[in-house]
Image (cartoon, one colour):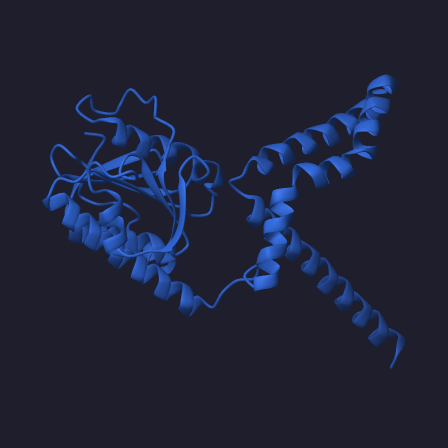
Length: 272
């Protein structure tokens, strides 16, 4: 092996090493997304920035204070992020920390779409109010914690039973993560937007509210009219048919088809 070959091999090993580190960091971010740990992580970044600026500007007292925070920060991180570390280790033990096969994910999304569309059509015909929020890239753990945990496999029958009036779980939102109903009776933030029609109630405001702070997709069934709506990216798409709802969900879940079609350019009325 020549010296040039050895240098090239060493370079490739360094590249692989860096890529693996970034991959692990990415997976850890996916684990803590949507939790309070994200806000704490932002605080740590601010502390580091203040430390660098204090050194650059010669603010010795502030620099010493930030040094003490960083020295003891490692122990504080272990204590503060304990639930996230535990969840990451559990997922690693189950082998679910790494991405699943694309075909399996496609099957899950298809089954979920069919179940939601079937349940929504049933409830719309009978004017059963419903609020179903589907997690996307931004996690919704903070909102899951406000409800009753279920961690059940999604099915149309389960969704219908949850929203039957005068049952313990019907009031509030159902949050779906991956292919599971994670929790029911969850509280979602209400939108303060003045552009929402006055005729719409709390369910629609909550759906728009959660779409303003996350990238979730939220389906609403009106208890008064049986109308079907979807909230996404702070916009409310109303007066949908079950078929249109299914098409919109398939377009959102299927990235390649969604890219080739006019994204969310549906002939529906927005915001009343």
